[in-house]
Structure formats: C-alpha cells, structure tokens
Image (cartoon, rainbow, N blue to C red; front, side):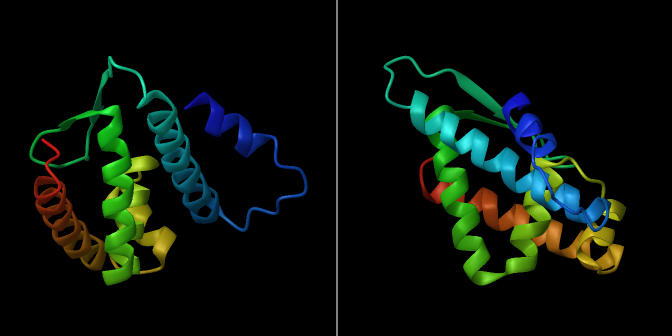
Length: 134
C-alpha cells in the first residue's frame, strides 16, 4: 500500500481536479499494486492468505494471493457489463470511500451508488464462486 501512496505523491505536474479525481486514481493504483504483488508472489509454493474486506459486505473474503488476480479479472469482466458498477466497487474497496464519497466521485446520487454497490457485490461474489475462489 505504501508503494501506491509513494507513486501518487511523487507525480510531478499532476493537476488534481478535486478529491474525487484523487481517490479515483488512488483506487486504481491500489488495485494495480495488489494485483502486481499477487502475481509476483503467486509463483511461490506457500501463498499467504489476504483478507479482502468489502465494506458493508456480509463478511470478508479470505483470498489466496493468486485469487487477487481472479478478483481483478472479475472486475474487468464487470467493467464490460457496467462501467459504473465496476467503478463503485473499485472506489469503495480500494479507496475505502463511503457511499456519499463514492456518489460525489462519480457525480451520481447516493441511491444510485447504493443500488450499484448491492448489485456489483452480488455479481462479484457469484463470479468469484464460479471461478472457484472461496
């Protein structure tokens, strides 16, 4: 996580338009750092478990590092179905934004984010189960 922060603060000449812009970029960087780390460590025989906590979710997922790659692939698939739902998951999970902050970042209502969050979480859990991620 420190790696993503260092990359964000080290960007020279970046003109952050607002908090939403910053958190959108931060969420994407956090996701890439986790996936890159999981891919680099996934080759080892002993993979440490990683807790993936989706705020307000019914519990957390305990994922092996290689499953983080499956999570990333599932999010890419969701993006093909609904860009906004994918962004909601990314902002809430990787940046830890609240419903209100996510709504502000996406310039939509809190109700829209709440519906997208609910649908996207259900889709993600189903998709990860289908892929054998427990």
